[in-house]
Amino acid sequence: MKNKLLLTAVAIAVSLLLGLPVLAQGELTNHQTSVSGKNREYLVYKPESCQNKGCPVLFMFHGLESNAQQAASAYYNWQATADQNNFLVVYPESLTQTAKS
Image (cartoon, rainbow, N blue to C red; front, side):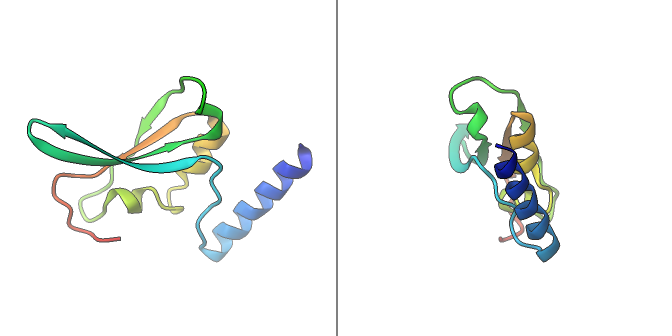
């Protein structure tokens, strides 16, 4: 167990230093819903620790010149934080998408 944690920590450190995506252990999925007749898209990151139980949720709202995919990038590192602290992350897409990933 300690070896796995050490290898994960080293992989994350190397990824951050090289600007590569951080290795997340859960899954990032695309979703859609309709609110007041408008389609809304959002990404959800669900850590392995939350697969079979309820967990708290954090909503990560991107800025005006960004999008949900960019908010979910390794730059903010919410997936690794969610893995460590057992919570879901939801990345809603704005109604006006100005940036492309």
